Length: 90
Picture (cartoon, rainbow, N blue to C red):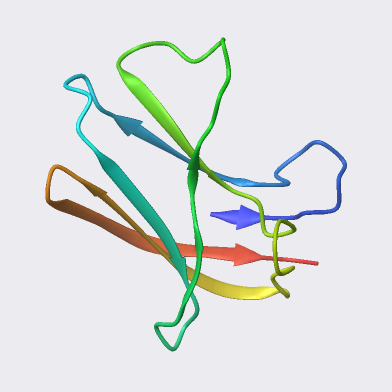
C-alpha cells in the first residue's frame, strides 16, 4: 500500500478494511522498520461504512509527522494478527 499525504484528497491516509461481524476488539499499530511503535490506527467514523466491516485509519501527518519511507502495520482481531507494509511517499 502506498500513501501520499499531500492533502489532495487521494491516498492521504492508510486505511485497512477489516471484516468483523462479531465486533471483536481490534488493535492496530504502525511501527518503524526497527520495530519501534509509532502510532495507533483509529477506527474511521464514516456513515457510508456498512456492517460487518470496520475501517482502521492511519494519518502520517497526525501527531509526529512521519517522514517518507517504509512502515510496518499490525492489526489484531480476536488474537489473529494481520501484518504488512505501507510506504509513505512525500
